[in-house]
Image (cartoon, rainbow, N blue to C red; front, side):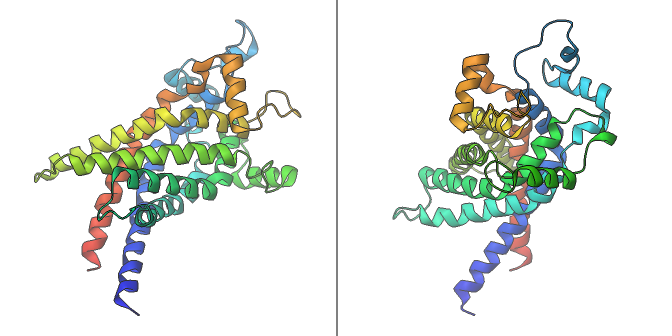
Length: 306
């Protein structure tokens, strides 16, 4: 086998291993905040005082956590974790692997990657990732929207079978909300990778390992936060499309931009940023965790397989 092919396969294996490790660690730590984000995005206007719905209307992150723990049990904060656990390792592996390959395509004749290279490679990686994970996202949102106690929530496999049985695999079934997922992941990763790698190359490295660790964590935190702020309207649209419709049997939220328009018109423009706090709380530190874990695991594997 030619040495160039061997080196490519070695690097690809390390990218897959480091990316998979980063995704697994991040989802295990940050999943409860993802669930809270989804619950906040799914609810519409506040119900009238005294109605039955008021007990399940959430006024913020900590109110949501408190009410879920009281009415559904403490472990309800991990509802829907199996789909992301099953998919996060291959998902992040694919994301980091494709990011590295897209970088080569978007060099545009430069001898080293530019901020535009990082951003376009991130966009491509996000779109690829979205196509892979959307069926898992559909199942996850369905599980996260269920407000029954943990023992009464159907299993991941039961929900998957139900969606396929009722609507099939297509854009009205297991792949519902695909366009919104592509928009969400594409925009996030364009900013996430573009900002992180551009700024990391500008800020001098520290010789002290603790300072260097904090440098990477800080840049990763800002990268995840910026990506979350910019892409959240796509995330809200995705949750509305994939979640339970307001009137059973009637599809209110169909398309990405159509859903955004409905939310903005009926609930105000600010409603497109529902769930921003838990999203930033998750993807700020979560983004830092992923990038730092990726960098350190990749460096370890690179040393180990030399």
